[in-house]
Amino acid sequence: MKYLIDDMPKNNYSTNLKLGSLFDGIGVFPLSASRYGITPTWASEIEKAPVSITKRYFPTMLHFGDITKIDGGKKPPVHIITFGSPCQNLSNIGKREGLTGSQSSLFYHAIRIIEEMRCATNGAYPAIAVWENVMGAFSSNNRLDFKAVLESFTNTEIPMPTSGVWAKAGMVRGNEVDVCWRVLDARYWGKPTLPQRRRRIFLVADFGGKRAREILFKTRELQSFPASCGEDRLPSTAASRRSSEKTRRKIPVIRPFQKRRMRSTAKDKNKSGFIGSFGRTNDPFPTLLAGSVNIFSFWYEGNEKEGYIRQLTPLECERLMGLPEGWTALGHKDEVISDYARYKAIGNAIAVPCAEYIMAGIAEVL
Image (cartoon, rainbow, N blue to C red; front, top):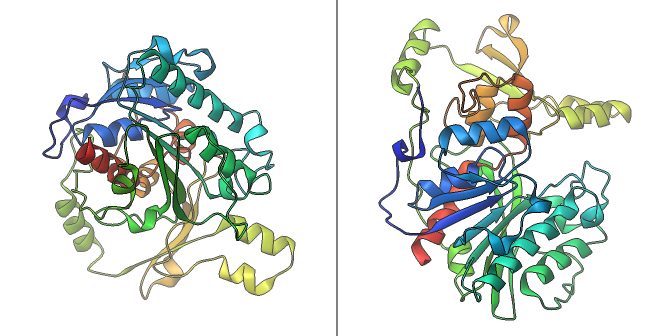
């Protein structure tokens, strides 16, 4: 069953705003924008599976492919441009080349496209840009990379903080551009909140006023959306009831493993650290990554000997990201997306409630 953008549940927002999504992935920013009355207009992505997935849900959204070949001055103007540029060279688990690395340096192409569009439209479009990235961007290249990010958006020199360390939230202003940033952890967002520890930097640049602060820092209520992607499924309450009856109301115990910590502590022969990597009941899952699959132990209280260890399924990973169930299962031609491609795409994605919070703010102020 096809599930198109026009069928998606929306908040009570009616806007004429349009969005362009660079490094689009599986369309989290377009999904979140559409829920607040913002129209996904075009996207740039080169990975085959994510492109097919987004074409399924956004059939009218244009796809421009390789970001290095896009001329922002020749593309349809949009009010908002979003991008989660590649983080491989910024991540604390990568080689840390920073913004000079071959992948993370693509950030500058996004800035170029924004500047080209603003030049072609006499500064009218885009009005807002949103950038998302890993925490490592604060510290890579001796903390100079984040300084370069701020200077790229403001086109002015930004001094290093006197402490030498970038704050988890802040704002700067330069050449009529208002820029705010904030770290959002997925585990504190959504209804219910997502049980995944996923801390990411979200930056909002306002090229036409002083609205970035209101977008990124104002407290607002997020609406709950159905988890189903339009496929025939049991309602969640019925599924829970059947599960409860089947297990005779036994209490499930789930303990996620911290595989990275497990490996490092084993290498260092750190016994207490290794034991701690097995997690505790009610611990959030570690950050989902594109290159690995998280595992966890599961049993029913009082039946520990019948427990087992397994890895998360793609469906469970979608739930941990706040995605509609089955979002990555099929492409636009109803082709089945492989589990490998789904894990990779989900690990590279953005937590939906975090993106929704920002899109709600943009819909309010614009």
